[in-house]
Length: 64
Image (cartoon, rainbow, N blue to C red; front, side, top):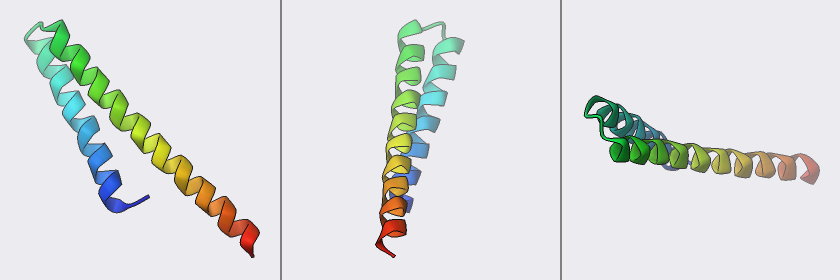
Protein backbone atom coordinates (compact mmCIF):
# COMPACT_ATOMS: atom_id res chain seq x y z
CA UNK A 1 0.00 0.00 0.00
CA UNK A 2 1.34 3.37 -0.90
CA UNK A 3 1.98 5.76 1.93
CA UNK A 4 -0.06 8.48 0.24
CA UNK A 5 -3.08 6.18 -0.14
CA UNK A 6 -2.81 5.13 3.49
CA UNK A 7 -2.72 8.76 4.62
CA UNK A 8 -5.69 9.71 2.44
CA UNK A 9 -7.77 6.85 3.81
CA UNK A 10 -6.82 7.68 7.39
CA UNK A 11 -7.69 11.33 6.86
CA UNK A 12 -11.05 10.39 5.37
CA UNK A 13 -11.82 8.24 8.42
CA UNK A 14 -10.78 11.09 10.74
CA UNK A 15 -12.93 13.57 8.83
CA UNK A 16 -15.84 11.18 9.18
CA UNK A 17 -15.32 10.87 12.93
CA UNK A 18 -15.29 14.65 13.23
CA UNK A 19 -18.48 15.08 11.22
CA UNK A 20 -20.16 12.32 13.17
CA UNK A 21 -19.27 13.97 16.50
CA UNK A 22 -20.35 17.39 15.25
CA UNK A 23 -23.65 15.93 14.09
CA UNK A 24 -24.26 14.35 17.47
CA UNK A 25 -23.40 17.60 19.24
CA UNK A 26 -25.64 19.68 17.00
CA UNK A 27 -28.38 17.02 17.01
CA UNK A 28 -28.17 16.91 13.22
CA UNK A 29 -28.87 13.36 12.04
CA UNK A 30 -27.92 14.23 8.44
CA UNK A 31 -24.42 15.41 9.43
CA UNK A 32 -23.98 12.44 11.73
CA UNK A 33 -24.90 9.97 8.98
CA UNK A 34 -22.67 11.81 6.51
CA UNK A 35 -19.78 11.41 8.95
CA UNK A 36 -20.54 7.73 9.39
CA UNK A 37 -20.59 7.33 5.60
CA UNK A 38 -17.19 9.07 5.24
CA UNK A 39 -15.72 6.90 7.99
CA UNK A 40 -17.00 3.70 6.38
CA UNK A 41 -15.79 4.77 2.95
CA UNK A 42 -12.28 5.38 4.27
CA UNK A 43 -12.30 2.00 6.00
CA UNK A 44 -13.47 0.23 2.84
CA UNK A 45 -10.73 1.84 0.79
CA UNK A 46 -8.19 0.83 3.41
CA UNK A 47 -9.42 -2.78 3.26
CA UNK A 48 -9.16 -2.73 -0.53
CA UNK A 49 -5.58 -1.51 -0.36
CA UNK A 50 -4.73 -4.24 2.16
CA UNK A 51 -6.25 -6.88 -0.12
CA UNK A 52 -4.12 -5.60 -3.01
CA UNK A 53 -1.03 -5.82 -0.81
CA UNK A 54 -1.90 -9.38 0.21
CA UNK A 55 -2.36 -10.38 -3.44
CA UNK A 56 1.02 -8.88 -4.34
CA UNK A 57 2.66 -10.79 -1.48
CA UNK A 58 1.08 -14.07 -2.62
CA UNK A 59 2.28 -13.43 -6.15
CA UNK A 60 5.83 -12.73 -4.89
CA UNK A 61 5.76 -15.93 -2.84
CA UNK A 62 4.95 -18.11 -5.84
CA UNK A 63 7.42 -16.40 -8.18
CA UNK A 64 10.40 -17.71 -6.22
